[in-house]
Image 1 (cartoon, rainbow, N blue to C red):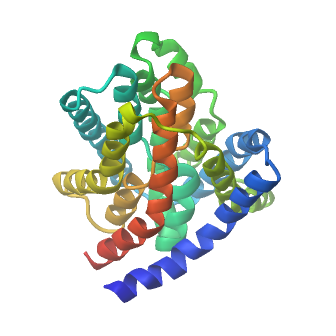
Image 2 (tube, rainbow, N blue to C red; image 1 turned 180 degrees about the vertical axis):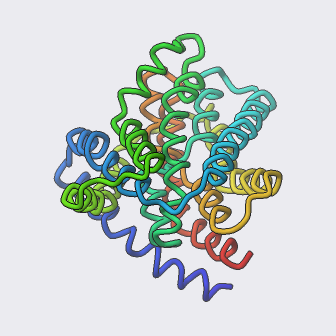
Length: 309
């Protein structure tokens, strides 16, 4: 068991850590501005990898149905868990909203996709693509609601979803599959080349962002919420995901991919929502940092467990 974990750590986490460390060093010593890189990632790299993957992905409509069902049910379970813990601990509204963000949204896009590709190969990436698209929609709708229920606007949330180029890339890929069409070979080659740049760039962005979120302090009154958020994301979230997968009778290659994606550390985008709607950004940013660092140990253990299941 220990040997398998160490082997997974070496084969999966070490390659991932190189661009993360590079991004962290650039952020710390060169004050790397991630805003232009985020534009590059959001409007160029993300649509490219979604189109490149979905257009030829080894997925069935059964995979799509099960992935969407898992995403929604898992989200509801985690929301209920975070809401219940917030009430038990008598957290203030801001900390309760922050705990909900920490508990429900994972870094499945700029950390999860490269991890799945290394751990489970191209088939794993194919299976992950539907989940990632679903998460983009959920974060820009339900995520906004969780962060600011009093300021939530359905129209604004829907508009934010359709401002994401990845959504249109997914629609194009779906149309190509439905009508049995393919991109011209030259275009497909160019899209694949751009998609190949996705992993190193987004992981470097993650490293730079970790340096920035790590400087946020945390008050004593939210320390309980911090430890609760850490426990939910690192311990309870994988157990909840396992339960939902069992309830939905999801097996085969889809099982480990969905479990790992649902067990990823806190989404970096959560702190953006927390800052915008005053949902305890210090709590959220600290949880992002520590769940990401802890994931370098927790995720190899989970990968070994699901591969042996």
